Length: 313
Image 1 (cartoon, one colour):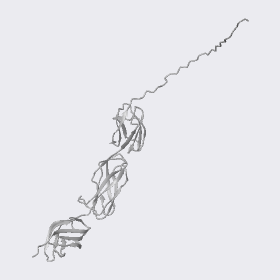
Image 2 (cartoon, rainbow, N blue to C red; image 1 turned 60 degrees about the horizontal axis):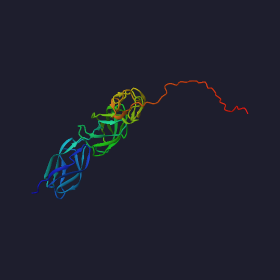
Image 3 (cartoon, rainbow, N blue to C red; image 1 turned 90 degrees about the vertical axis):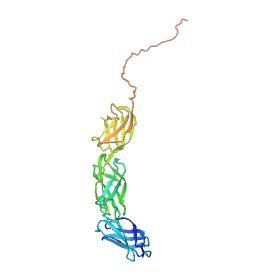
Image 4 (tube, helix red, strand yellow; image 1 turned 30 degrees about the vertical axis):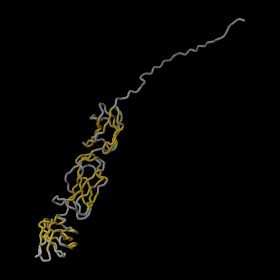
């Protein structure tokens, strides 16, 4: 008497409600060598459409999972022509389609400087779940006073569950910014926050000159300073600048404060400190100067000297 079929593994092991899996493969032993073994699942809602491979060790089929199929594990059953069956218990799971989009951005980033954010698709049970079709994603600001620019869209490809969107920029220096993602086409993914925040800090890219004396003007070039000073500050080695000559989002001009010593220049915007940039404080150069002018008037006397001879001849 022939041995019953013995399924050992399946791939993939999970499928979503409403999905069609073009290549579902069962491997094992003692399948019909003539290619007459068939495949089925416990429960209802999974249809075997066709077979592409049927031999003594492999069954490959296209299957469709109904949108209303019950979620959870299913037994995979192989039946030979002699009606003997083999069952692989709980080998395949029907899962819910993705419904949520989570955004993961870096914990810190520079204002007006490109960074990357990862958007992932999850089901209602917070299980990572691949999308059924190409799904287009849009990033927005959920918490924060600024706005995004650069690249703010991406696509999660069918069968995948994540996309990395590079080249995103945020224009305000502040802490606790939260980004949201929504789908604009494809699978319907609602924004769902995981409360992962990003602190955006301003950038001081250069200080010129890099050395100077008290009272001299210093230019701070960078990004994210804001168009006006507001409550923002500049310090030189901990000494607060009290004389601001001009302030813009990319350039600050200050007078080096009294008491400043060599050390780090730091700009603080909305409580966020820039990376320090070194500056050297030098002694003031003593320049020659005229402190008093005295004017004297002298009488000029013309003296005429005549040289000659007065001899009697």
